Amino acid sequence: MPSPGLSATPRRSMKPQRLLGAASGWFVAVTLFASWLLNLLPWGRWPGVPDFFGIVLLFWSVHAPRRVGMTVGFVGGLLLDVHNARLLGESALAYTLIVYWAVAWRGRILRFGPAAQTLHVLPVVVLSLGAMVALRSLLLLTWPGWWWLADCLVTALLWPFVTWLLQLPQRIAAGSDPT
Image 1: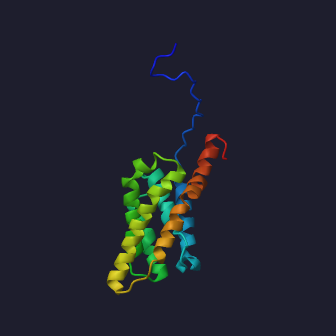
Image 2: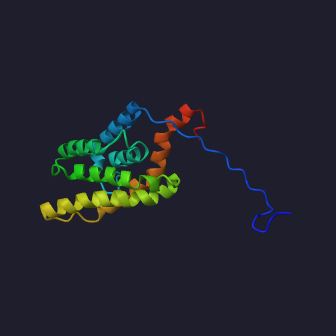
Image 3: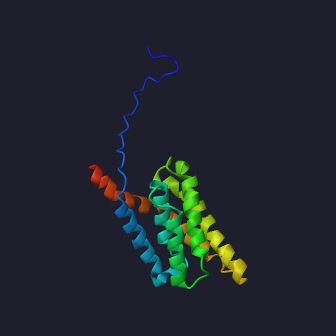
């Protein structure tokens, strides 16, 4: 006879998940460079286009914080500022803030699945891009409108796909099913 605090129904067996190995430094560098190149394309000035470099930088800051630091975000942001002829340092500020908040909230973000992580990624993206927009508005005395919130929302909604895509080589190397 079971004790009063225990249920008589058997527990469902949960399938154990495999631990993913660490990503290679080359893979991290190639994905960051490819996402940076995607930000150089001319569609980056349209409303609703995600920040590819920002989301990949955020991913690697959460999943490999020792390989990607604020220096990577700062240098990538400066190079994007030069390419886009923006105020020097505004993208560098945004990407540095992305890395800071990603490392600060890393433990909290990793507790959830990729879909629920989107709710934690959205404030990180809004805070970092909002600081960039506020700085630009303060220095140029112009308000760009609310288009940047659409960019933040699209970037955050891409988080589950980016997580699946960037962890795919690690899953294949670990011998698990990539689906």
